[in-house]
Length: 99
Image (spheres, rainbow, N blue to C red):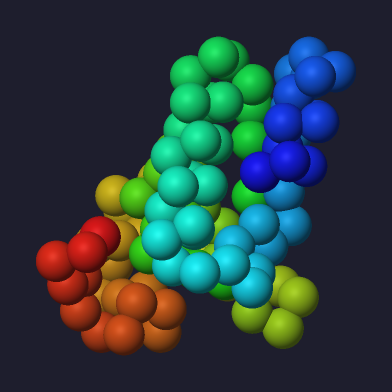
């Protein structure tokens, strides 16, 4: 959160975040993504590289799936969340109630 705050002080047009949830407690991850949603509402573009697919797609306009360094799929967050192959490979086969 401090790093995001520091970055926002320079009034960026775009932020690139690499695994922002890595090592954080689940409740803190939720708070962080809520804060990123507020950043997004200010007009700052966000590019987030993240392994937590469920929360990422919940907050994304678009997603790109990478496997072994190659893009293997892309689409809107709704398209990806509703794609059976994506659900099986990245979401545990079920949309579940927490998406």
